[in-house]
Length: 298
Image (cartoon, rainbow, N blue to C red; front, side):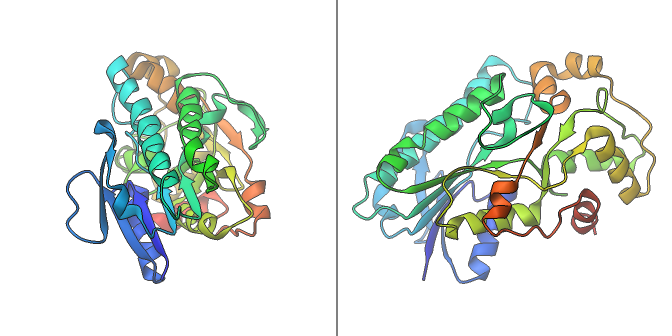
């Protein structure tokens, strides 16, 4: 039986990924920030730079999803430091522990994000495109570089650069549902910023796919093949919910309320290409936004 360790296993993506893996007979071990309560848990504490390396013995693969929520509140210096350190320190701690095993796992799928590309605007970007500017781009570069010890030890390291993951239980879509259902939705800023998204079901399937795609390493964009503008996203979500969406959120209010976080998360955008993922044999179940929203909100 394959044994897979998952960090961030209680999060929106991690919890569902653990369910998916277990449903196909995988032995899942969750990394937890407390003493382990059984063989299906591995204790670690990135903030204290501690991990039970002995419990990692026999692990075949690792999916590393843990990290401070970038949209959890207005960015001040303390929050920005937590966002960066939770990713950089946690990833390096895990990568070094895996590299030190007598039998390292064959693959580390270490989460990343399309924030790597910064505010790239309308021209398409792919895995060969350079890093953009801004705080999130710096975070993602450090996040990916922190996995270097695992790669140096011969472990196949994949960085799924995830777009906006559509889930009714959290993330961008989860936050938008209440105002849109109340008829208070609308475009953000000018509405022209591109949004590269992926349905939660496809994100889970793609992460599972990366575990077995032995020809893939390095960055792989996890986005649907049909990005949309913010204005298009607004229209489709309103149509699916059968609600009007006539209350725009001007850029100046976003700036006043959220500062740099608003600029990078709401007003910036990327049109991200997923050709590398598709070329590896992955098929999207929900390639267009309307089908993805209808399935998630059914």
